[in-house]
Length: 197
Ligand code: URA
Image (cartoon, rainbow, N blue to C red; front, side, top):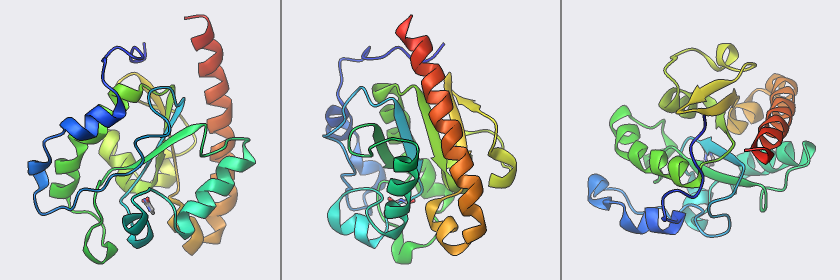
């Protein structure tokens, strides 16, 4: 069974406001996207970490990788402004955009867990290795993890290539588009189930 929705009496704004930010006192607070889509986004998308553009705007996936993500969503009929909640494993930009260190991931994970609990999405889409490895127990490559649904705390989770990786490796574009079609199918199934819950 998936997480009960709206059980917590807490909004995503409360999560960020109440979170003990001292846990990462060397991090500048990254607001991410908290306000537009509170508790009822059916799809929660998890990336790696904000980059320079995201850091400047305080929004996830607004640079080049974000444009590709927007396009992949549009191809399956989803509007990123209405239908999805997008966040990152890391809530702050790592220096020089380097890959997050495991201590940084561990520091930010409790916040991601709370977001998932409070939003209680119908499904998760994990973009790239950092997000997949943060939430799934299998340390496999994306090539192995993609294609079949996994489960995080009762919530179905699909894995695909990170949009930045697709930009560097155009051969990932077609398999990623297939993965997004899987997202659309699974979301429809979950919504059909949900309607009778
Ligand atoms: N890459 C990520 O993983 N997240 C963003 O928000 C932007 C780029």
